[in-house]
Length: 250
Image (cartoon, rainbow, N blue to C red):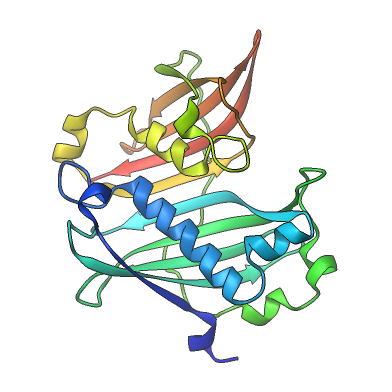
């Protein structure tokens, strides 16, 4: 199979309701587009959510790292390219490129996915289930950004809390993965985004949260000016880590 056949290309327009007050596409909408493109690409090759659900499996996003030089602006067309970088026993790496209206690549993303049993909620063995079938779609195209790194937050006092609501919940009954991205960025005042742009955004998902859960947000500025953020769920007198994120602003 040729490299071109292994890469999916999907076209979009930055609709007015998909941009923020600066007129640029929001990170949440970009994240949604990336996940949708992953779904389109997998479905076109026989590994989509619909096919997996028939056998009680589903894809689950584990990690996502996005690095940007720019963002599409209101009404501008753009495209997202996606390909499978590698397949392991429990995880697969998928990459993305964000291409602007002039054909210039203005961002990349890396993601890590697991195929999970809907019955046991545990990761499935990709090799045992599919043999080399997934490996047939591995592409050697380069993704020139760092893989998601280790995020550690030492803060003990939350900077915010939030009780999850109807609009946070997806079809699986838990908080949508993109909602965490939006909640993380809401920790920063609007003035931050008037003065700076998001250069890199990382998120690592650890556990699930559900409707009515109380989420606590811990935010720590690092020596290099980046921010590490941890979201924990309050369980009585204990706290459970739900996800960790890194935000780099320039």
